[in-house]
Length: 257
Length: 65
Image 1 (cartoon, rainbow over the protein chains, first blue to last red):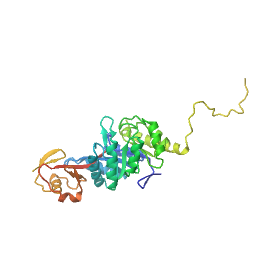
Image 2 (image 1 turned 180 degrees about the vertical axis):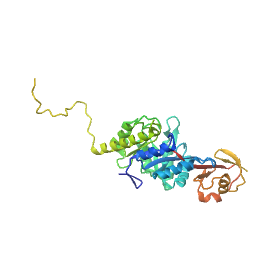
Image 3 (image 1 turned 30 degrees about the horizontal axis):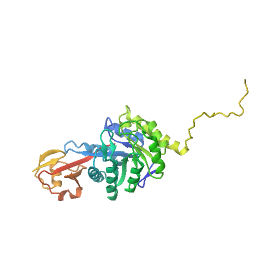
Image 4 (image 1 turned 90 degrees about the vertical axis):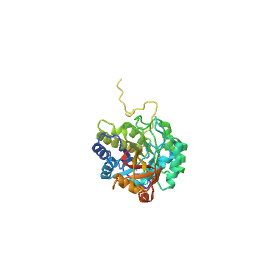
């Protein structure tokens, strides 16, 4: 079982709640994914519409753990204040910390990220930092008090899968004991399976499910892929080789020339 | 006095943040508040005095990735 901040999770699939065609589809997709953790956010609420209240009641009915994010924050101050507000509203110390540094790629500002992580961890938050595969940044995030890391696979919403396999493998090898969750960029279930086969502990998916033609079916497909990849990792994949090796025994082959 | 609530100016006669939320009709809604960029916990809203031109953010749960 996956353990993050002392919480044991059967499912290694975290699901985002954004960009679904309807609240009903979101709800069914969460169930089909078997996810135990969903990401949520905070936005301005008008007293008239109260859109947030309806959304929150849907999530509460699902009985899943929430991981609030600081999406859209570009500075340490914004991210820290948003985290404080999220802790009160959602009643959890978990925070998916995003400090965005570049708008086209939504690449994290890793300098701000480390600073915000240090402030939040010191304030009792359990920080899930959205980061790159950079080893030095990872080390600094751990020193800042993070006990989980969320490296990107590719830019958020791009669906490009694991862009830097070498870097991600190096990150996994450097921090064998740290829960690593691939966050962002996964487009299809095979990307998720690949992440799990490489030894990552979990994946976080949003757009790939929400924007599928059939999000509920895609959520189920991701659940299967994550389980398959995890099992494959535990089963110990064979080493690839350059030349063919006959799978059928050669000894005893009939002489029929 | 005029205050800026979620980016829109409005007139208020409320003297503190709790009263302003009540006046605007948030009632029992699950929201978090910030005053001039600083988080104000729910319990401290009655003590958060308002002044002309104050910026208030009222945030609620929303979809997120």
